[in-house]
Image (tube, one colour):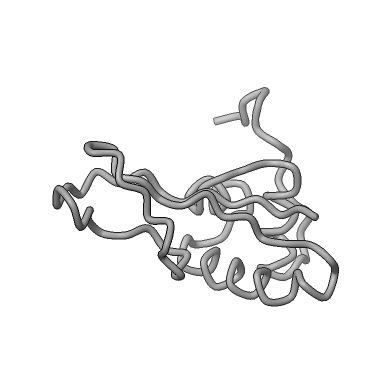
Length: 107
């Protein structure tokens, strides 16, 4: 299936996982699944690369901005969550319908 007009081009071959993830989220706010599709990496590897980017971005005067996950049923937002992965269920209503966190790399 050809890529849609709205999707950014895939990153260049030969990039490390953090470089591929950084290229995917430069100027865009994406979920780990969207990053995985753009970068051509497994979702687990995307989370590892995001953790690496969060640590190394400080040295480049950048920051990994995270829009926290939220419950799609009751609206609870996981603002105090340190982990980058999507929570399994809401602590308030126990729903498993969770909108995943979104990531953006910026200054």
